[in-house]
Image (tube, rainbow, N blue to C red; front, side, top):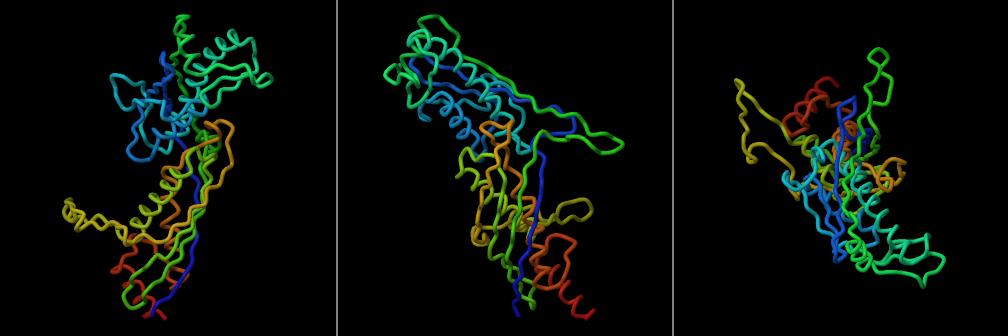
Length: 329
């Protein structure tokens, strides 16, 4: 017999390290003589899309094409320290450093543009710098970069951003442990075979407050990836030990979800921009993982009226719980 259930999981998650642990990042932006841009960061992009987001931020701030930006990352010889790629901090912390560096460079460019155009109300857009009140007055970004070089001006800037917080009060537990928080709610719909204990996750609906989605496709990818990780955590992944040794040492024995196990995932990006994030953004790396397992377990409980307190809820464990409930009834 198959039964269906629906469950919800909610979470909040501190962005960055928090609890007085140092959390600082650095970035460098340089304008070349031909108008191209070099961006340097020690941050590692291992698939989450941080390089893309950084280039988008700099392109937006300077009004240049994304393709005109060269990104140099994770080179201890050539890039400044950006801290680890962890704690869902990269967009929030390093993104702020990147934006500060871009704005510092932009200040130099603007001063030269004001001198050339005789206007102060300038906007950087579409590879040009133009006056808002007198649109006929403008200069291309490439020509402006050339003029800055001819004047011997420094158009490379390095900026730091620090989100280190004070520790909470040890007596009351009160205080601001993290600079900012992520929020999310997820719903899971499951179908459970009461004979075998097999759980099929039919659908996950994930709503995440990301502050501002710099790249919505990247955000959706993060949400979907986190959901699949949570799916494995809830139903399959289990480290088995015997005498201090791991017994299931290969992916043939340690089961993780495959593409055939992934349900329909509905991602809902909620944008509530934060005042201290780059363009209002904050991190979304780990939050999708956190509420997935609780949502699935609550859905199983809704279907079977069986509360699961140990993971994973695999065939063996769930079948045992179902039989125990039948005996109790």
